[in-house]
Image (cartoon, rainbow, N blue to C red):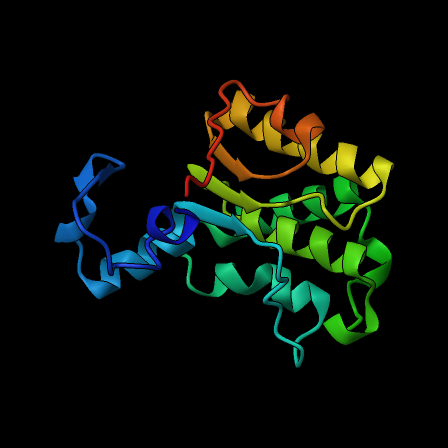
Length: 172
Protein backbone atom coordinates (compact mmCIF):
# COMPACT_ATOMS: atom_id res chain seq x y z
CA UNK A 1 0.00 0.00 0.00
CA UNK A 2 2.78 2.47 0.89
CA UNK A 3 4.58 1.72 -2.38
CA UNK A 4 1.43 2.44 -4.36
CA UNK A 5 0.64 5.63 -2.44
CA UNK A 6 4.29 6.69 -2.72
CA UNK A 7 4.22 6.32 -6.51
CA UNK A 8 6.85 3.57 -6.41
CA UNK A 9 4.69 0.65 -7.51
CA UNK A 10 2.68 1.08 -10.71
CA UNK A 11 1.80 -2.59 -11.10
CA UNK A 12 -1.75 -2.63 -9.71
CA UNK A 13 -5.32 -2.63 -10.97
CA UNK A 14 -7.46 0.48 -10.68
CA UNK A 15 -6.59 4.12 -10.26
CA UNK A 16 -6.54 6.81 -7.62
CA UNK A 17 -6.23 10.56 -7.36
CA UNK A 18 -3.40 12.17 -5.41
CA UNK A 19 -2.90 15.92 -5.03
CA UNK A 20 -5.80 16.48 -7.43
CA UNK A 21 -4.39 14.38 -10.30
CA UNK A 22 -4.96 10.82 -11.45
CA UNK A 23 -1.71 9.05 -10.74
CA UNK A 24 -2.04 6.86 -13.85
CA UNK A 25 -1.77 10.02 -15.98
CA UNK A 26 1.65 11.05 -14.59
CA UNK A 27 4.81 10.45 -16.62
CA UNK A 28 8.05 9.19 -15.07
CA UNK A 29 9.47 12.70 -14.67
CA UNK A 30 6.35 13.90 -12.85
CA UNK A 31 6.38 10.84 -10.60
CA UNK A 32 10.00 11.50 -9.64
CA UNK A 33 9.31 15.18 -8.98
CA UNK A 34 6.32 14.38 -6.79
CA UNK A 35 8.31 11.80 -4.80
CA UNK A 36 10.98 14.44 -4.15
CA UNK A 37 8.78 17.48 -3.55
CA UNK A 38 5.45 16.22 -2.22
CA UNK A 39 6.06 12.85 -0.54
CA UNK A 40 8.33 12.01 2.37
CA UNK A 41 9.28 8.40 3.08
CA UNK A 42 10.15 7.12 6.57
CA UNK A 43 10.92 3.49 5.88
CA UNK A 44 11.96 0.69 8.21
CA UNK A 45 15.03 0.00 6.09
CA UNK A 46 17.12 3.14 6.14
CA UNK A 47 18.01 3.31 2.41
CA UNK A 48 20.83 5.70 3.27
CA UNK A 49 23.73 6.02 0.86
CA UNK A 50 26.78 4.64 2.66
CA UNK A 51 29.31 6.69 0.68
CA UNK A 52 27.67 9.97 1.79
CA UNK A 53 27.85 11.61 5.21
CA UNK A 54 24.72 11.85 7.32
CA UNK A 55 24.45 15.54 6.45
CA UNK A 56 24.71 14.78 2.72
CA UNK A 57 22.07 12.05 3.02
CA UNK A 58 19.64 14.43 4.69
CA UNK A 59 20.27 17.20 2.13
CA UNK A 60 19.98 14.85 -0.86
CA UNK A 61 16.39 15.91 -1.74
CA UNK A 62 17.60 19.52 -1.94
CA UNK A 63 19.80 18.64 -4.93
CA UNK A 64 16.69 17.98 -6.99
CA UNK A 65 14.52 20.71 -5.47
CA UNK A 66 13.05 23.46 -7.58
CA UNK A 67 12.02 25.43 -4.52
CA UNK A 68 13.99 27.89 -2.36
CA UNK A 69 17.02 25.87 -1.25
CA UNK A 70 18.18 28.55 1.22
CA UNK A 71 14.91 28.32 3.13
CA UNK A 72 15.23 24.54 3.17
CA UNK A 73 18.77 24.85 4.59
CA UNK A 74 17.29 26.81 7.50
CA UNK A 75 14.79 23.98 7.92
CA UNK A 76 17.73 21.55 7.94
CA UNK A 77 19.25 23.25 10.99
CA UNK A 78 15.93 23.25 12.82
CA UNK A 79 15.15 19.59 12.07
CA UNK A 80 18.65 18.43 13.03
CA UNK A 81 18.40 20.30 16.33
CA UNK A 82 14.92 19.06 17.19
CA UNK A 83 15.77 15.40 16.66
CA UNK A 84 19.23 15.69 18.19
CA UNK A 85 21.53 14.40 15.46
CA UNK A 86 24.07 17.25 15.29
CA UNK A 87 26.93 15.08 16.64
CA UNK A 88 26.65 12.53 13.82
CA UNK A 89 26.35 14.83 10.78
CA UNK A 90 29.91 14.13 9.57
CA UNK A 91 29.67 10.36 10.11
CA UNK A 92 28.81 7.82 7.43
CA UNK A 93 25.73 5.60 7.87
CA UNK A 94 27.81 2.50 8.65
CA UNK A 95 29.23 4.34 11.68
CA UNK A 96 25.77 4.96 13.13
CA UNK A 97 23.43 2.90 15.28
CA UNK A 98 20.03 1.74 14.06
CA UNK A 99 18.29 4.42 16.08
CA UNK A 100 20.54 7.15 14.69
CA UNK A 101 19.88 5.97 11.15
CA UNK A 102 16.13 6.00 11.82
CA UNK A 103 16.33 9.64 12.89
CA UNK A 104 18.40 10.50 9.80
CA UNK A 105 15.82 8.87 7.53
CA UNK A 106 13.15 10.89 9.27
CA UNK A 107 15.09 14.14 8.81
CA UNK A 108 15.54 13.41 5.11
CA UNK A 109 11.82 12.63 4.77
CA UNK A 110 10.68 15.94 6.25
CA UNK A 111 13.33 18.33 4.86
CA UNK A 112 11.10 19.30 1.91
CA UNK A 113 8.01 19.78 4.12
CA UNK A 114 6.08 17.31 1.98
CA UNK A 115 2.30 17.24 1.72
CA UNK A 116 2.30 13.50 2.47
CA UNK A 117 4.57 11.48 4.75
CA UNK A 118 4.48 7.71 4.47
CA UNK A 119 5.85 5.90 7.51
CA UNK A 120 6.67 2.22 7.92
CA UNK A 121 7.30 1.47 11.60
CA UNK A 122 8.94 4.90 12.07
CA UNK A 123 9.81 4.41 15.73
CA UNK A 124 10.68 0.69 15.81
CA UNK A 125 14.40 1.17 16.60
CA UNK A 126 14.10 4.27 18.79
CA UNK A 127 14.28 4.68 22.55
CA UNK A 128 11.40 6.37 24.38
CA UNK A 129 12.75 9.94 24.20
CA UNK A 130 13.61 9.80 20.51
CA UNK A 131 10.34 8.06 19.72
CA UNK A 132 8.46 10.94 21.33
CA UNK A 133 10.57 13.54 19.44
CA UNK A 134 9.81 11.92 16.10
CA UNK A 135 6.09 11.51 16.77
CA UNK A 136 5.83 15.08 18.07
CA UNK A 137 7.56 16.46 14.97
CA UNK A 138 5.33 14.40 12.67
CA UNK A 139 2.17 15.72 14.25
CA UNK A 140 3.54 19.25 14.41
CA UNK A 141 3.96 19.08 10.62
CA UNK A 142 0.39 17.82 10.38
CA UNK A 143 -0.88 20.77 12.41
CA UNK A 144 1.31 23.54 10.97
CA UNK A 145 1.54 22.52 7.31
CA UNK A 146 -1.52 20.28 6.94
CA UNK A 147 0.78 17.37 6.09
CA UNK A 148 -1.01 14.04 5.78
CA UNK A 149 0.66 11.31 7.82
CA UNK A 150 0.08 7.66 6.90
CA UNK A 151 1.75 5.21 9.23
CA UNK A 152 1.97 1.44 9.10
CA UNK A 153 2.79 0.18 12.58
CA UNK A 154 2.30 -2.60 15.08
CA UNK A 155 2.89 -0.10 17.91
CA UNK A 156 -0.54 0.68 19.38
CA UNK A 157 0.83 3.73 21.19
CA UNK A 158 1.93 5.23 17.86
CA UNK A 159 -1.27 4.14 16.09
CA UNK A 160 -3.49 5.69 18.76
CA UNK A 161 -1.88 9.11 18.23
CA UNK A 162 -3.37 9.25 14.72
CA UNK A 163 -6.75 10.78 13.96
CA UNK A 164 -7.96 7.71 12.06
CA UNK A 165 -6.94 4.08 12.42
CA UNK A 166 -7.55 1.47 9.75
CA UNK A 167 -6.75 -2.05 10.84
CA UNK A 168 -5.85 -4.52 8.12
CA UNK A 169 -6.23 -8.22 8.74
CA UNK A 170 -5.29 -11.16 6.60
CA UNK A 171 -8.20 -13.49 5.94
CA UNK A 172 -7.54 -17.06 4.93
